[in-house]
Length: 196
Image 1 (tube, rainbow, N blue to C red):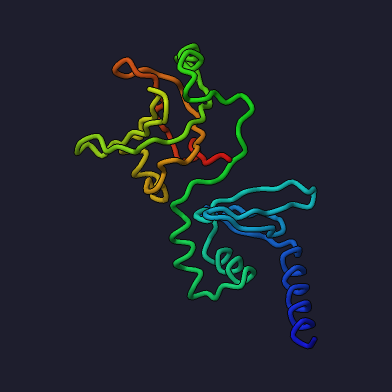
Image 2 (image 1 turned 120 degrees about the vertical axis):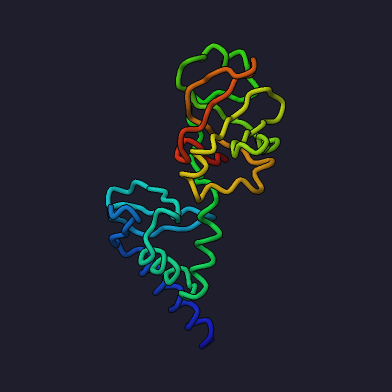
């Protein structure tokens, strides 16, 4: 009975700590006011006073905020550093865009040639394009591709391409054609996200 009481009190104190609204700081110096609501690989969920949720990639939080999150979820500071380093390379999880085009619908994608669009597809493979440093995402059951320029990859150090096969991703960008294949050329890490 005593152990059950201790567990209940500990759980209650953690819930109170999680519900407390705090100021969280990003690496660029901006602040977020909100309550910590949860964590998933690479993403922290905050809730503001108005009840709206905000997802923030772990890589965007400064060290102090990362340390505080680690304490809230019961990790020691020594454990927090490797965990944040590993999750910084994962893509953020977003809700599916209502107007997104399925990557297998090449006719609809072709009708958007030269226009900005959102495309969702299941990654078949990630390929290196020779020694150029460029990469391509190939999708299942379609010839639509995503071109990942070397410059974009260099400016997105948290963008780790390992283990993407079988993941459903959402890409935002201008539809173009290269070698008679429809593609989006990724301009920044913010234009790419995992979707359920």
